[in-house]
Image (spheres, helix red, strand yellow):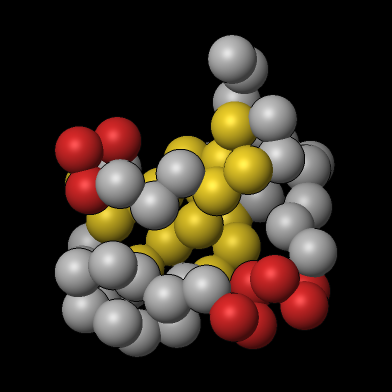
Length: 62
């Protein structure tokens, strides 16, 4: 599996539906990281092959 990387996009419709599994707050797309970021939890969730990986063990601290 490969990461989406910089410049990749997440469908705006999907992004509007996703929430952080820890805080249940909305996520934002960070193109530089190629990840979905939860500012409330201080975590960045990877997107692999266009699929958000919303597992805390896969997230990295921001």
